[in-house]
Length: 142
Image: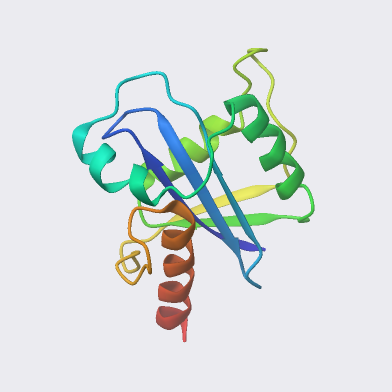
């Protein structure tokens, strides 16, 4: 199953704020997590007003992500930015128990420069941007 991925984070290299995933048939996963650092002014002005979801702990987010991912026999994640893949992979790892990770089906990744989320109905909202990536990919693949 192909999944399109977008994340929002607190400036370059900052903490994860939200993650959005959309599969081939339109099923979605969208969550936000608490961050411990001060928000970058650009993030405060452009990401937080369109978050539209209450943050949860990173541990609860990981459990929800695992429950959502395990329904697929295998997954091919598509993103337009390498950091999105890095944030996704970081969510697979346990903070509480180093050396452990959530269960997932086999995963592969693809980072594309020929698609982007510029067609998003709500730029800088991870789920809206993931939806736009899916549509951009489907337009390029047609």
